[in-house]
Image (cartoon, rainbow, N blue to C red):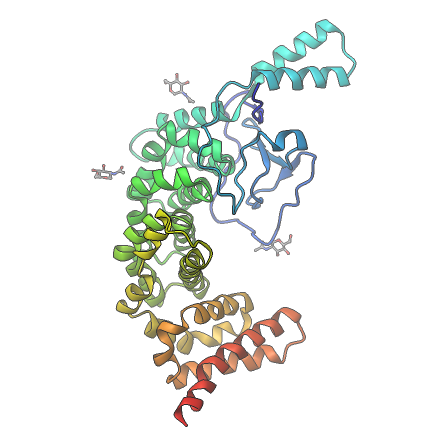
Amino acid sequence: MRLIIATVIAVLAINIVQAGTAENVNKSDEFVATHEWQVIREGQGIPKGLHVRINMQTGVKEAKLLDESERGTALQSQAGEDDKGDQKPLALEHQANIIEESVRKAKEQKRSYAELRKAYKDFQKNFRTDGEVIVQLLEQYRNFSKTPLASELKPKFNVLDNLEYMLHQIDNALVFIDSGGLEDVLLPIVVNDTNTDLKVSAMRVLGALTANNPKAQIKVFERNFGSHLAQILMTSTNSAEVSSALHALGAMLRKFPLAQERILSTIGTQAFISVLSNSQVELRNKAKVVTLISDLLLEKRSAFENNMDASEAIAQYALIELETWLSNQGYCAKMEAVLSKDYVQLLDQPETVEQFSVALESTEQMCRSLWSKSATLRHALLTLRNRYARSEDEYRLEVSQALTKVCANFFEQRSHSDL
Ligand SMILES: *[C@@H]1O[C@H](CO)[C@@H](O)[C@H](O)[C@H]1NC(C)=O
Ligand SMILES: *[C@@H]1O[C@H](CO)[C@@H](O)[C@H](O)[C@H]1NC(C)=O
Ligand SMILES: *[C@@H]1O[C@H](CO)[C@@H](O)[C@H](O)[C@H]1NC(C)=O
């Protein structure tokens, strides 16, 4: 019998107690998983591949590492795994696991057979499997009225919040998609909703269900989310909205050359440049854009380096001319302008500087002629380099070294060739 992990979830009543909003996320506050269930705090991010359960009555979420026995059968999302292509959607039938667990629990407590039966009955009544919970959450969402009601906002956030946690798992994401979740929940919010926080939550769910899940990436692409996300990037200046749109777009595009070609050759590159150009978008989000650009360029380069055979994927990567599209949209000049104008803000943001410095390196070939002649860019980079070089903090010193390398590359070689 094929055991599938049974994330058993109490559904005593779908009472919404806890409201998850988009604002209070603390990413630095990491969840450290063990083999015991631990409560996930409000807004706390969790790593991929954990076993998650949600108590629908109290809103409490818990996570733990998968046990060894579950590892072989639990279909986890793990970066870099390529053989997920033929995984089947999660079956909704997990009774065997539920019985096993309830018997085990009862035995631990040394109960009589009658008590054990009762315990099992209670257990069965109160717990649901992942697939069932997802279907139920969808039904709950469909029950909301078509016209936005303020009173329904909290329950909506709660549904999205729970989905975000559950849809990191590949099977759960596919159940959600097969049950119409993209069309009935996410698309209407992302496309038409006027509540920014709700859009942010929906895009987080989209990012969670798409990340490292090729089948989901295809479905999300087919539903035209790429254009909708790009549209949001071109019009929004809300920090959380830009950030979650970038995350969802990146999750859809990574390792999916066909989508990269279709989206980036048109509206996608335009959206990237628009974020870089918008003076109201904060530098952290601009750094996210250049990081995504850089990742996509490196992804194509490494596909060519590592994959010698003329596979279909290579043929698709060959059609992606991201550098040309970026150049045509003025990437080099925008990047120069952002750094020349805003570098002062970067004096105390080493992570952001690091992201920019990686991007400067991976796009240097296309921009070298412009950047190496730019006195303002040179001044900005050297100022940052010198500032971090004076630090005693190891990370800042590393950032300074990376900048030294970038500067040497652009500005010293020029004087060489000038000779
Ligand atoms: C995030 O959590 C860390 C550790 O608990 C804390 O030091 C930091 O101030 C928090 N940041 C925000 C923005 O809440
Ligand atoms: C949705 O509404 C129907 C009809 O009013 C009701 O029977 C059902 O229990 C509701 N489902 C959820 C999950 O709220
Ligand atoms: C968005 O709203 C328009 C106009 O009301 C409607 O025609 C369209 O179907 C909606 N799109 C989605 C995805 O709900």
